[in-house]
Amino acid sequence: MSKLLPLYRAATALAAPLIARHLKQRLARGKEDVVRFNERLGEAAHPRPLGPLVWAHAASVGESLSMLPLVEALLEGHETVYVLMTSGTVTSAKLLEDRLPPRAFHQYVPVDRVPYVNAFLDHWRPDLVLWAESEFWPNLTTLPASRGIPMVLINGRVSPESYRKWKRWPGLAKAILKSFSLCLGQADLDAERLKHLGAEPVRSVGNLKFAVPPLPADADDLAAMSNQFGERPRWLAASTHAGEEAMVWQAHQTIAADHPGLLSVIVPRHPDRAADIARELTAVGACVARRSLDEVPSADTDIYIADTMGELGLFFRLCPISFMGKSLVDLGGQNPIEPARLESAIVFGPHMWNFPDITERLLAADGAARVADQTELAGTVATLLADVSLCQTRAANALAIAQSESAVLPSVLTELQPFMAAITLSNDESPPT
Image 1 (cartoon, rainbow, N blue to C red):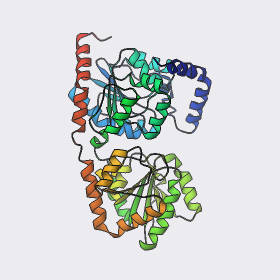
Image 2: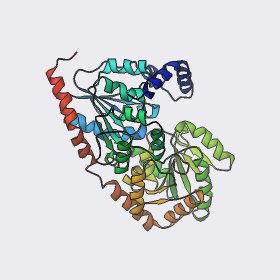
Image 3: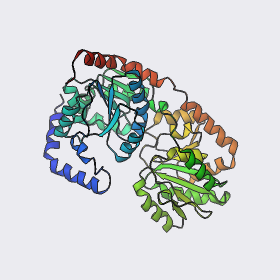
Image 4: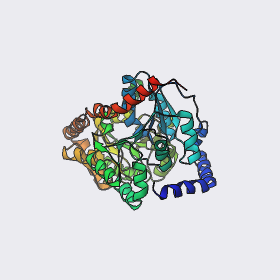
């Protein structure tokens, strides 16, 4: 065991009052679920079901979406198995509440303190843990393994920033990664980084984000919004982060000079920022409407802020061009496979390090455009609006990439089969407790 792990545990014990204060602040800002807050302290909201239980953890919305097809396939293939799915954000909890299949249920993941994690494990007693992507909390990963619970890293991702950080703490990284019986990387580069940090065995069988079906949209809402938008030229800025909305407005003004009646749709990654975004853009001259306030875009509306939950699929369908947010600011980008599946031409900024493999494949196939700043964003969007054939070709190329890894889910299921066979056999031989 790394010497840093006991130090980390001691630090989280000593910092209990600070952690409690931080959680209260998150509650006040709406970042925690008031009704279900005790789940974050390790308290259970449901009794443990009898039979094999798989604990699947996904940090937030993106990871949750990529895990859903896997959860559905595991339940379909193993009729006695239940899945406990955890996440840490209010938005992901709402998404999972609507989309989890029967025999799967959601619980907030406990905060990474030993008493909370142990209380969680004492109640749920999972037979197998599936850990998505890159949220390597020391207690949450090592305590299940110390109880002999097999753990598999699914769709493992190690960004350049995370790789540099973990290389500074090699002992702790190795202690965490050695908790996993198997690590499956998103891409060969992720597998290579995981192996260098101490994971073993490591394999790469593809990226589960390619297995996610197209984001849904309500048919009635689609028809109504299509009617409201009419024939206006339009584009989408999806999952934007602070700083990007002002760039979108600057780009809008440039594009509108050649495309009168332009409507720019903004879907902020965090809808609770919508009021601030509206004030900021209104102050610099934009005419803004907000979906959450039931404001219908008029002929004068420049910016339509779609600040509702779970409707990104609606706006990918409505807009022929989609700029992926979190990429003009240095935060790593958002998943470009989502617009690709819905045939919306993709544009993103220079900071797409959360999706390096997907990004390079899209660019190589002429399935996306990369821009350096808001000036290039305006030029690229204006070109795509003017050239419908180019826009459709880019969208078709991106769709082909999105459909290119259809075998990834069966490949992951094959890797998991020995673990699933072991837990179902074990539970068949032992009476429930």
